[in-house]
Image (tube, rainbow, N blue to C red; front, side):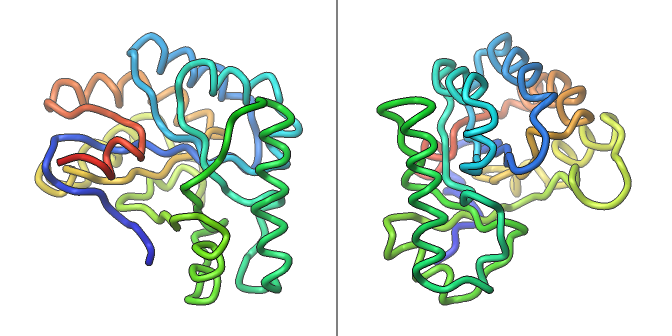
Length: 205
């Protein structure tokens, strides 16, 4: 039910940026991605979309993919079926308002990576494919990380074989991630890896 990795057919990685908290570094991340001609997947909360409509529109305009990270970033294990459906639909509504014609389907990531079978089943019933990750950058865990740490973790923690089809988790509110992003993209290119949208990696053959 829960996707942790894509097919290993191609030397591709899916970089996924979760938004729940801050947005300050996001514009710099978008500029870096533009400069490298890379498009990725953003898991946005409805609240973040509502608070950052211009950034949301820029994400769409730049050709990135938007996925659903719920509206208010709750632990979904504690919510009723109705509340879960509302968290997902309210995010779609916020996105439709900020960027008409854009959908956050089909991908969904549970806040905190917290889920049980019921949450996954309900997400699927609401039209979403639940997504986890292969590698957590740790940019939102514990003490603040340095850009150097993030570069080594994201590009060097997994072997090249393990990296094929990997889904990488980082956060668009993380300044160290924004600072590390140019080097991360350069390093992947040197390694012969293409950084792609989640939909592209999952569909690779």
